[in-house]
Image (cartoon, rainbow, N blue to C red; front, side, top):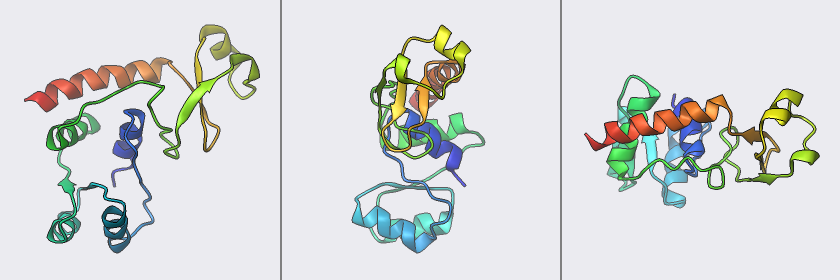
Length: 149
């Protein structure tokens, strides 16, 4: 249910486990054993987690900006959109700087326009500060304002 939110949290540098195949019991077990905060829009799962003294947030909001603002406000955290700290939105792996000349799976036009690239240490996906990055940065500003209200 919250896959888009999980991807954005990863970009904002939060270590985020998301797997739509996990059932409620598995989610609770992971949150409990790894001392994680469980984010869910499922009221029953939220209640089961909090009854076991697991940190949990019942997600509200109609869109990702509202949901992010609610998470940041509830957990008193801030968005950090820094590629050196961001995680891969696909697999949650850590990113590291990449040498431009070594990249083979990036469109030529992107290589011509961009100087800095980052590669996921886990899955090898390549990232750069393109238009998507700018939209995420704008969203971070909106989310921060919303979280403060």
